[in-house]
Length: 180
Ligand SMILES: Cc1cc2nc3c(=O)[nH]c(=O)nc-3n(C[C@H](O)[C@H](O)[C@H](O)COP(=O)(O)O)c2cc1C
Image 1: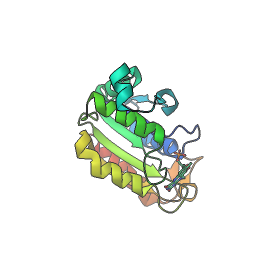
Image 2 (image 1 turned 90 degrees about the horizontal axis):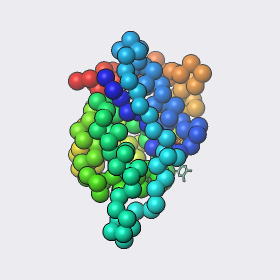
Image 3 (image 1 turned 180 degrees about the vertical axis):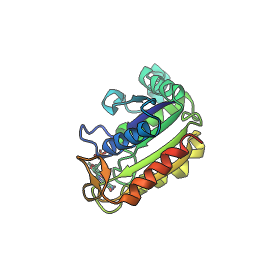
Image 4 (image 1 turned 90 degrees about the vertical axis):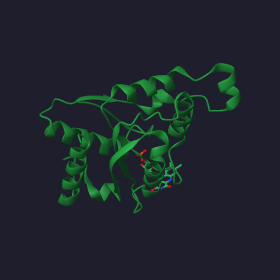
C-alpha cells in the first residue's frame, strides 16, 4: 500500500502535520510497517497566485502537475487540514486552484482520510466540512473524517496518542476503512 500523507500547512510545527504523522504511525502498525509513505511540504508548493491571465501566459506550474501525479501514484491519501479563517490556508487554496485547472477531478478517486485540528474548541470543523461537502466535485473519495478540538489538550504529543482512548480507537477504525 502506498500512501500520500500531508498537512496543508506550511508551519514547520504544524499540529495538523503532527496528527497526520500519528495516523501514519498507526497505519504502519496495522500493516506491520509495510506501508510506503510519501509526504509533502507545502513550502515546496508556494506557487504564483492563480489568475487566468497567468495561466494564459505561462500555463500550469510544473509543481501543480507534480502534485497531481503524486496523488495519482498513491493508493490512498491522509490529509491534515488546518483552518485559516474558516477555510484552507492560502498556500493550499492556490495549489488547489492551479491543480484543478490541470484536472478538476484531481483527487482521482483515491480513498481519503481527512483530519483537522486547531488549538481552539472548533477543531477546524469549518474547513473539514467544506472539504467533505466539495469532495465529489474534485473526485475525492472520503472514507472518513475526524475533527479534533483543542489539540494541545487532546493530544499527548510525546506519546503521539490522543488523551481520550476512544479517539485512538476512532482513528484506528478510520484507517482500516482506507483499505475498503
Ligand atoms: C491567518 C490565521 C487564521 C486562522 N483562522 C482560524 C480559524 O478560522 N479557525 C480555527 O480554528 N483556527 C484558526 N487559526 C488558528 C489555527 O488553527 C492554528 O494556527 C493552527 O496551529 C493551524 O494549524 P497548523 O499548525 O497545522 O498550521 C488561524 C490561524 C491563522 C494564522
